[in-house]
Image 1 (cartoon, one colour):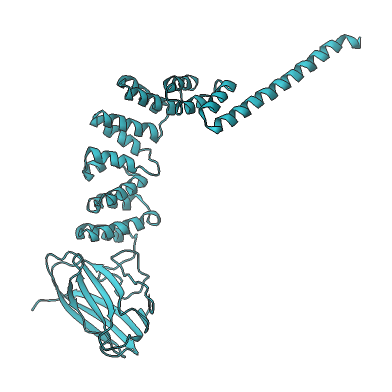
Image 2 (cartoon, helix red, strand yellow):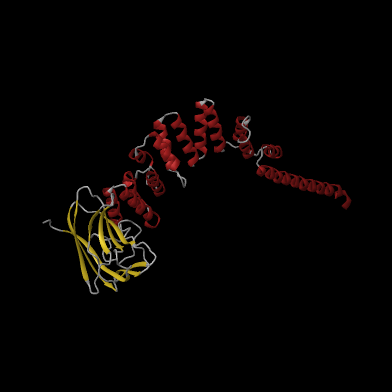
Length: 401
C-alpha cells in the first residue's frame, strides 16, 4: 500500500523543483534587466526590454535616446502604463513639433488628468503660451503656481514675456502660498523691480513667518532704499513693526540708545568691523575702542533714516577717554542717493558727559538720509587711541529761524 503513492510524491517534488528553477530564472531576468537599464545605453535598454517586455519605463528611456523610433516607443510605454504622464508629455510635445496640435493638446491634458503635479501644469502653460492663447496660458500658469516646486522662477519669466507688468503677473499667478510669494519677491528684485514688490512683501508678512521670511524682507527694504523708493521702504518697515516681526522705535533714529543688538537692515545700525577699531552696543550705549591702528578714514556706525522736508536738530550725548581735541570723530548727515554731505557736527571729545548738537535742513528732493558716525584723522595729528561712548542720539523737528 505505501508504494502506491510514491509516483505522486515524486511528481510533486519535480514540480516543486521546476517551480523553484523557474523562480530563480525570473529573478535572474529581472536582476539582469535592471543592470542593463542602469547602463543607460540604447543597446542595453533594448536588452532590458527583451528580458522584461512589460518594462514601460524602459521604453520611455529608450525613446529619449532613439529619436527615429521615439514615437512608437512612447506609445508602447503608454499602452503598458496609461498613468505614465512623462510619456504622455513627451509624445504630446512631439506631436506639437509635427504640427498635430489637436493630438498634442489631448495628450498634455491626459498627462494632467493622471498626474496633478507641477510638471503637466507647467507644460500646458508653455503649450498655450506658444499658441498665443493667453486666457488658457494664465489659467495653467495659475494652476502651476498652486502646485509649486522649490523654484518657479521660470514660470514668472514666462509670464514676464507675456507682459512685463508686475501687477498683472501678481494678480494672475501669485496666491497666498508663502513659497510662491517669496519666490515672486526674489524674481522682482532680480528684474530690478524692487519698487513693484511692496504689495507682495506686505502679503508675505501676513502669510509667512518671521524666522523664514524676515531677512528677505530686510533685503527688500535695502533694495528699495538703494532705488530711491522711500515710500515703499517705509511702508514695509512699519508693517514689520506693526506685526511685531521686529523690535524698533518710532523715534529717529531707530535704536537711539543702542540698547539692542542691531538688526541686519538699513533702518537699524550698521557697526562695521575695522582693524584697530571695535564697537559694541549695550546698556552703556555704543562703546567704541580705538587702538591707534585703525584706518585713517573709518566708518564707526551708520543708519538710514527717512524724514519729511523741514528743519531738524540732532542731539547726541557722549563722553570720551584719552581722546584729545581735534579728534576727527564726528556725526555726519548725507543724502542717501547722492552721498552729498548735508551737515557735520563738531569733533567729539570730552572726558565728562557732553552733548553734541547739529542743526540741519531736509529738502523736498532728499527722500532718504544716512546718519553716520565717522573717524577721519586730521592732518598733523596721530591716530586716536582711547574710547568713545555714545549714550544716545535723537533727531527732532526744529522750528526754522
